[in-house]
Length: 638
Image (cartoon, rainbow, N blue to C red):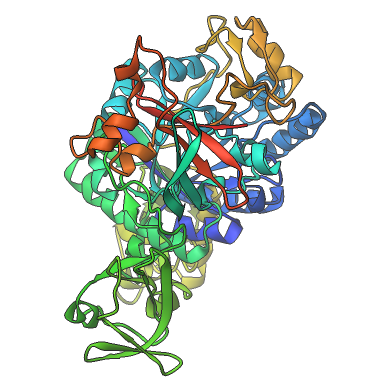
């Protein structure tokens, strides 16, 4: 049996509570500082309250401390980790190895044996070698790169089966490997590795081809969002991910609102529960069941259209080059399809016009072949468009989500048993844990049957996380016990469950780093290793590195070669997305002529033709380089 967690984002305390109510087995939330979403910080007190709310359900709370850290911040981080440990958090998701040093060199971890380390995807976790190295350093769970295929995830699990693998299943996608994007820092002085990403990848660019030695430019595309990926949706591949070895399925979105979290978490909860019903070797890693008052549909929440990304290999349709904004759910391209979509007053519709731009409007009603807008004007279905019609705001759906939409209850069963001088009351939780107390009370004959009254009183669990699934009576007679006495007995047992969290999924008991830990990278580390403090630098030097350069945030890097400074490394490829990849069977002839891949040019003198650049509206250019042997695209700045 393998315990599977649905891991949900929490922008704040209330969002975290709703994520739990709607079916999350674990939630991740930002600390006051040092999280990769600087705008989603939370006080330690709020995190403590979330832990208290999560505990009865067996839901874990992970805190993101996944930025790189400067020297002057190390003591502040150490103190913050101690406070988070005291608050009872289950794990810290980290990027900077200084945190690993801080935790394992401190004594406070002894006082919170549950505190674990998870390796953030910002650590660029793509290989079994890297995962094994992180395991040897004491990391219990590793967040894999989004770009990995099912086969690659499976291979990692087979080679390192004792590490829990966390994979993203839904939400926004960064175009660069996480932790390897420096575009925001390079262009705007806002570091993605410090939680301050300026979303360089969502900006429109011109795609420029530099032709020959003359340097003459040809504009292939004008002001398109060439690096803006669609949103991930792997809901159809959850079972395959579990079979590949994933144990934690992660929803992106610590900046998303409550409505988004409610909808997406409830949807994935239902999909997973269907799998668990058929596959008993998989089991959810928390307690309880949810009653949802709406029909979840992720297409109704913010999305840039969907992709499963590289899960099944490289495929076209990973980007939405027309807009980085939400397009919502597709309604169709015909009058009948739109009319059958049951539009509501206040709905928002959008489409891509003939110029390749997003247009949108609010709806009043639909009659015939026209949509009447809220301002009285009309929109004809015959208008020339590049796309069908999408609903990016479902007014009625949002209204539903603005109200209470879920309850979550943990099942308990009661036993009332007669003793020599009174009674024993036992409460058994659905995971098998029991608490019981004996009470001295006289055996007084009742005038009528008592079962119904006893069951009714013990079932009154109010707004606690519990609901009674049944009551067993082991009584030799119809003894009379007043309702007030039963209520007092019932209340006396509840604190024992409320204050303890069930441990459903196994955890390692010794997280001390192993002496055999080695550096799974070249011995000479460039700024790509993201070393921003002396503690991390010393760690690498003590574990085999011969040279460690400072992070770009600390020291401006030298250009690697004539292409400039590497600011993005991507598995996503613009040439492939646009049908210009020479390996694609449908690539046009000129692409094969001008955009030769590295394999075709191996051993030949490189020609200065077919170079591609991205150009911002302010004129800044960024060289694109294609390593076709590794099937990667690099973006360089000069």
